Amino acid sequence: MSQLLKLNDVETHIGQYHILQGVSLEVKKGEVTVLLGRNGAGKTTTLRTIMGLNPASKGRVLFQGEEIQSLPTYKIAKKGIGYVPEDQGIFAELTVEENIRVAIQKDTEETAERMNWILNLFPDLKKFWKKPGGLLSGGQKQMLSIARAYVNDNQLLLIDEPSKGLAPIMVEKVMESILQMKNQTTIVLVEQNFMMASTIGDCFYIIDDGRTVSQGTMKQLKEDENMKRKYLGIA
Ligand SMILES: Nc1ncnc2c1ncn2[C@@H]1O[C@H](COP(=O)(O)OP(=O)(O)O)[C@@H](O)[C@H]1O
Ligand SMILES: [Mg+2]
Image (cartoon, rainbow, N blue to C red; front, side, top):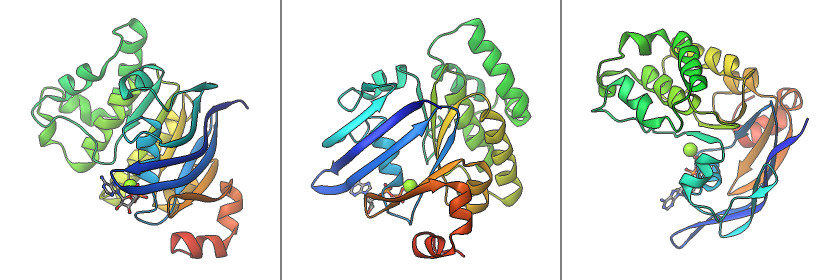
């Protein structure tokens, strides 16, 4: 399988703080790569660095072989990277439909097909089509945020803790939807819910104190009680 994204010893400063101090990872096309690690480890910052929202101060970010670490966010997005941020980033005042329409980069037949596909996956969004995004439940907002990233012809989706704050039944739904999307796109998933991470993920990286400290296949991690205890506080 070919490599889609590569981070090479990436460092990121936010203001005076040295947040990422050496993140290296590779994302293979067609796979779900899960980023794990304690709260405050640097998972969100890693996604924001890929998107150019917290640009790297050192190291390289390669997307399809091309260096993108110095590009502005809108150019990175246009290269085909969709971002589903932790706070979902939807507009409370806009309707569900408007929230999706403002996200669309190219209004083509293919976009319409993708929109249909994602709305069939999330019937709740159809139900609330003309209602303000602010009226949605947490789980529905998550679905809307995923739909906004999915409608575009992205090569890669970055999804930050989609299960956070959701009721178990919603976690199941979101997990199901990501499993469906898995056949269509490559995904980098930050996910602390180990059940979800291990069900969806093909491989993992653990980030600790702003560094990638471990990597492997999800199968290896499932069997490694030490690693789970040390970095994830589970076992
Ligand atoms: N805007 C910011 N200003 C200062 N520190 C920040 C900022 N954003 C994140 N951090 C710090 O960077 C570290 C990593 O944060 P984050 O990437 O959000 O971690 P994670 O997503 O793994 O929980 C944390 O110590 C956090 O406090
Ligand atoms: Mg985070």
